[in-house]
Amino acid sequence: MIQFLNPRPAWLAVFTVIVALSLPAPGADKNSAKGQDSQPPSRAVAQKSNPTPLEQALSKCRQGDKAGAVEQFLKIDWKAGPAFSPKSPLSVREKDLPAMSAPDREKLLADVLAMLKDLKQLASAVKEKGVAAAATDQELARRCFAKLDRCGTALDSPESLKILQLTARSLRKMAAVEAAKLGK
Image 1 (cartoon, rainbow, N blue to C red):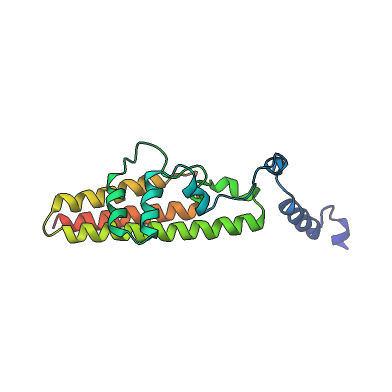
Image 2 (image 1 turned 90 degrees about the horizontal axis):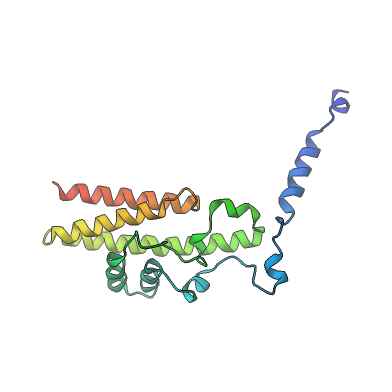
């Protein structure tokens, strides 16, 4: 009997949430109306539009040129501009995800995970170079670890995707652990 007196039954609230989440965001179809692609950025698109130095290093790493990727990474000026081009999946902001359709979010997540795998491989190669240099060239080792730390700092933005923020923090922690070993 009490259920009939409740002006907002629970099923209505659940139904409202489901409908609200399934509707496109206001203005979501503006790009398709103009003949533009409304798909999320992909790795291929990111590489076609003026890639940033980090994207260039990731591309070299993906192609198997670890030494070239590490050299490119060590040359990056982290204060010179954004780490990723606007078309890169890693430039998407966390707050933009709810406005995307489920298939677009799934494609974006696949692209993000692939790019983060490349980033982790690159960071591992930079770490390895620093560890190898620690015995003979402490300055190079410090530079490797400092660049990893700066990369982590640059990528750890409150606007970034949460998974990118976590990866950035792990880069900073890795750099700190290795840099601390140099002091011993």
